Amino acid sequence: MSYAPPEENTLGVVVGGKPRRREADATRRVIRAATPRRASLGTGFIGIGAAVVCGLRAIYGFVWFIGQWGTYPDPLPAAAGWAVLITVLVATFAVSRVMGQLPDWMFAIFLTGLAAATALDLYAIWPLHDIGRNATAAVTAGMALIVVITLRRSLDVLISAAVLGATLATAMVLNSNLGPDDLAPQVTTLAFAVLPAVIGVVVVRGFRRLVQVELDRVLVQSTVSAPRFAVGMMASEELARLDLAAEELLDSVATGKTKLPLDPKTASTAASLATELRLHLIEGRRETWLYHAITESDLLGKAVTLTDKGSLAGLLDPQQRDGLLSTAWLLVSDTVKSGQGRTVQIAVGPATNSVETPQGRRISIPIIITTTGVARNRVDPATWEAIRKVGKYSDSTQNSSLRVDIECLVDNPADQ
Image (cartoon, rainbow, N blue to C red; front, side):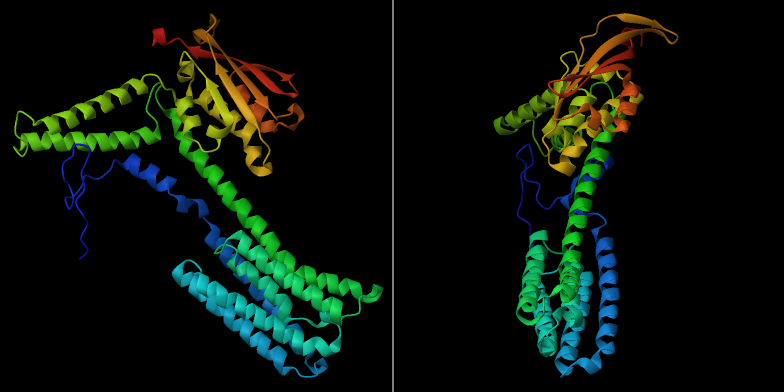
């Protein structure tokens, strides 16, 4: 049994080897959801689909190889190339499924196998002087790269595809007739060998980006139902740590492990703990759900600026909150897709006057959304639907970008 060195908690008490209290269910869910490995959620299924596509392409190529068996001056090198290719593909798929990843040594063997299969195939068809019409294992080797698109870095796959494409292109220039009647088969074969890996990399990177963005939004969506003033998800984890430290101190005093009066070191640590708890309580009375939604989001935190001196965003009901949060997401989400620098500034308040409505007298809060890099004619229609949930609005163009003025009606907190 391995030995873990003792650790000190917030109070400076050695707690190594002692069982720790289980974290709160909400905190554990947040920590699990924020784990980086969740960013690759679902790529395993993409890998299986890629393996199926590669298998179908291998069957097609092998049947084509058998069909032109009689045209080879010596078919044995091509057959050996196919044997090497199939062995490498099966071994790579099995190792990746068992280990959940593809180590560097296995990736090196995989690339060596593809290179050997390509070389043997080119050697067998070289006397035919037509790479485009006769290459089989070499083309399938390019398709085989999609098997590892979810297991290796995109750069690794792209470099491998580029090297294979350059090899085939060089062989075609040196060995094949590139006349008008023969150029199309050469280009088609080269595309079949290189493009699947490139397309696969683009799809996987887009999928991972989509999952990261959606996961980020799910994490901050919980703020829609939060109280007007509350601590955020990250602060909840810190509060759980402080709560555990406080319980340990009180328990040690109650059981007599810590004698009263407290020694200077323990008393100083207890005072620091009390100060941290008070600071968290004070922050919880100033920060609204919208502040936490923006600051704790990896996407919104980089692009959205909030001005809410009166903490009036906390007065919005859940539907209005959802509309305002969705508006911010829709306005900046294209930044992830296109790489363009979009920014959004949200100014809430000050409250102007009260308005008589069928639901009673309500307070009117102005919300101004100004943007940079967002043309009005490029705004998603769903954005306008989200804005309508917040209140009546008018839009205009400011510095060639969108500006939205919203009149948001909320319940008077004095009447609650």
